[in-house]
Length: 378
Image 1 (cartoon, rainbow, N blue to C red):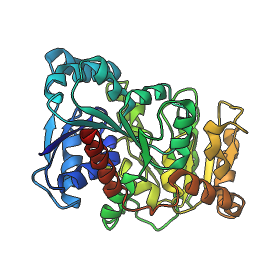
Image 2: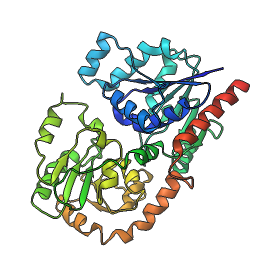
Image 3: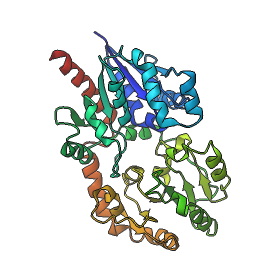
């Protein structure tokens, strides 16, 4: 009997890079039918690209979610959080035809409130960072959860949001995708200088973006040793009707490159090609230190972070609380990296475990099928 599985990408295209390789692995299995549903039109291009990278299985169907006029207006108006629940509600009848629904976002738990009956709801937990997420309690509504490794799984077990039987660790599928695309040429600057990646988060109470972004741009414009890539979290631009992106992109210069949401901003291109990471609370730092390198963290809000498990990653480099210390910290980051090297290596082990960094997509596919077979036999 054929198992029917739907993947749902309810947010921006970055979600594709956390789960689409798993969809490809499942679609290659016998008696397994997979369909991917997306909400953002840009996601279709990303999904097709990933499908091609993993063998181009034509049986893997890619479809947009059906949307009412009202829901389309919410999308145009960038009322994106409100839009999600409407999209799920308007597609619940079709989704109920599947044996399993797989998401990489906690809010897919809303499906159970909106009439999801037959399918098992499965979460591929995206991100590997330490930041506390407001809706993390929603994980308890999933029937099965796949974690990137022991650190995050143990946290959710301790909080009582999942159980040993309802969860497993499979690694980080995004690494498989990057491994498939890393041969593509990366060249955005005319000169061969060290690249600094500035990767601010969107969370207003913790981000450095609004207070220090302009100062950082001006500081790099006034020096000639580094090139700077600014790649904020894509949710930074939920508001503003594209005005914020337009104004920010006008700051591009010879040694400052600003990306507000291209494919390179979500597929590990910048984290893999940069020499120094500068950020605040984004989990992308864990993608950066897979190859341990210098980091600098910005704390304009003067958060009391020492000993706080939600800021564990700030032990990977110097933490700056005064904007005038940013460039000096960046200049000494390489020579002082030895102070933070052991912390980076230890957290990679705790975060992703001892399993190989590659192969998470296949491990996830196997875990999902084994779980569904076990349920059917019960």
